[in-house]
Image (cartoon, rainbow, N blue to C red; front, side, top):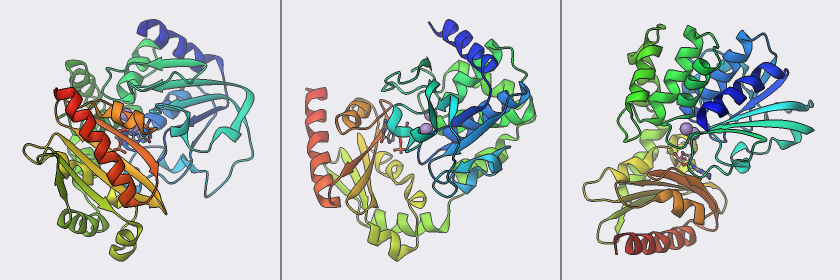
Length: 328
Ligand code: 5GP
Ligand code: MN
Ligand code: MN
């Protein structure tokens, strides 16, 4: 059970040294906050650790203490291998990216996550699928493991809670989330500043790509599905990068009467990153899983190979089936 998993995870942190800490590709606030939270716990235990990501970590999270320690593997490869690995906020191995060459053959992997589609890929798994964020599980781990709470750790955990609940607005915002957040604020977290950086500020690139995407927004399935598509050409012409194209899916789902919002972003030629958001009855985690991805019932994603048009057609057909069967 959960209490026992917390104890085992705490023991894992105390028993090993020289940790490799990582989160998922295209890291969000929970992934980054959680990876750095683990780093702060390890630091206070006097352990050594390396925090990595396959790619870049968004600069908007640079206010997080320890951010500068996160290594971008694609920019600066690592030669070492590690026997103790901690993966946070990853639903399956593929979410970690191309990092497994860093795992020693006898590596033990602690998998800390909250996705319902998590397949327990760790040698040790600390999973609570009704947690709003991986940071919420790490808050529990800090308490259960009797690790000292301190301002840097509190800021990282708070950021994970804030971002994965959409600013304490989504249905995953439980009393436990609010109580944990309140306790974290007592360590000096500035909630206005964190919300401003993570939720309010948008890049100019985002505005440019948003303008173009909204101009072509498509409604289908009796106006219950809204979708936007962004090609490599769109990104190039507007000067936006992939990260700038994040969050487009929310505009789709937020339209009155829309049940499923979808964004299609051509990440690489004929490689389409698909994001789903549902309002009430469609389980988009199951949809995404059918396409090789995963996530939560109301927020999920996957990467599908094919042209933008092909993938749009394929995914919209699948959504139609799901809506038909789930509503009857
Ligand atoms: P987003 O659409 O913002 O990229 O992701 C929404 C949710 O779906 C997040 O919880 C994220 O972890 C999950 N997700 C997105 N893409 C994938 C994917 O390719 N595989 C899996 N397993 N989960 C994904
Ligand atoms: Mn995440
Ligand atoms: Mn998360």
